[in-house]
Amino acid sequence: MNENIIYVFIILVLYVAYKKYTQYKVLKLVPTLLLKGGQIIDVRTTEEFNTSNKEGSINIPITYLESRMKELDKTKPIILCCASGGRSALAKRTLISNGFENVYNAGTWKTLLKF
Image (cartoon, rainbow, N blue to C red; front, side):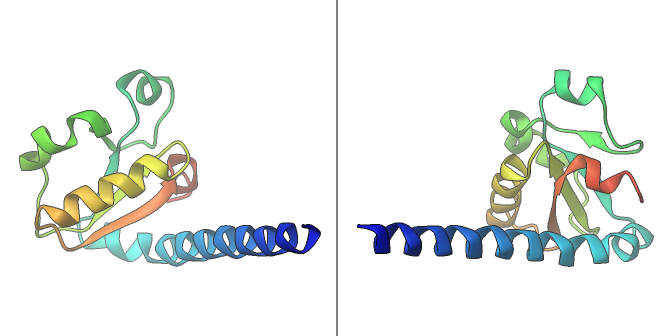
């Protein structure tokens, strides 16, 4: 029994490390993506966005993403963010499945404040 708990813990640690590493890779690209006309899309609710946000970001709540996709330029990079990275991961999958190619999940909107 204890051995199984150790394996679950190891898998959990590896998963978290992988998520952090992929977010780190995206954050390194953000300055270049912004120079290429990248659009920062915050998929949090309007209430969350109005409380605090990254200046210059566009709020498209995840629940409205499919109906508002036409507002996005498919030729420019799209940098997604939310409160923790979960909704932006879902938004990334949604956009890619609808023909968008240059889509990046930056995780939490707070990580974009330095750009």
